[in-house]
Every structure is written in C-alpha cells, then in structure tokens.
Length: 171
Image 1 (cartoon, rainbow, N blue to C red):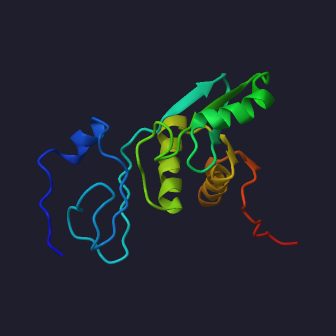
Image 2: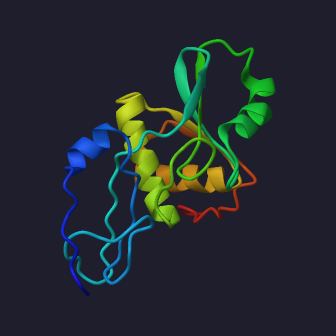
C-alpha cells in the first residue's frame, strides 16, 4: 500500500470548520471519501468524531433523544412521537438525524461506528444528564446498542419495532 502524505490543513482546523466527516478506515482501503492517511494495522477501525449531527429540539426539561428508522430523518420520528408526548410537561425531545440521514453528514459504514458517533453526541450535547432514548426500527436498534455499551449514561428506553432480542439476565 502506498502511503499518502497528510493534507496541508490540520485535522483540528478541518474539524472546527465542520468539513471533516466521520470516517471508518481499514488497512488497504480508501476512506469513505478519499485515501487514508498514516499506517493502520489490519482490522483496526478509526472513527474521527468531528461532525455535528443535525437535530431539532422541542419542549424543555428532561431529555428524550429520538432516533428514526433506517435512512429516514428526524421529521419522520417527530411526526410519529409528537402526538403522544407534545402535551407532557417537563420533557425535552431531541430529534436526531443519524450520520448519513437527513441533514447530517455521512458517517461510519457500520452500526458500531454509528453507535459511537451517537455516544459522542450524548457526551457533547447532553452532558452528564442521563437521557431517555426512543427509537423506531433501526433507531431502536441503535438506542438499545447504545444502552448496552453505556448503561451508566442512559436512563431508559422506548423501543418500537426494534428487532432486538432480549438476551436475558436470568429467568
């Protein structure tokens, strides 16, 4: 594999301009939008968490992070959920476009990377507050995966048509 020199502009500067999308990289392959920079060991994945996801916030109070179906945007999730929660006081609904959906830039090519992008989003945008996660279909899959990886960060789940099977913690 021929090594390509790094571009002139620094990664930090590009991240601040918000033009450095999330990347999944494997040795011997190009990144999703161009060649890789620097050596990687076989099978190593690199996620650069530098893009801000598109969100819409409604209401005020305890956060509910809402994740839509695969390839759909936050407006579909809002249309599905708002009739049930709009009149509930004390809840802030945060409708998120996952990477590559709606107005969010492209992201990792696999669900593991998308979950890490969402974990980074929670750290940056939600902070120490433990949100509820709501997800439909693929959004439910992502929400459940996020809760499994970071249970200390999540207060609860609302999963609709999620396709996850309960692994059971004893009968």
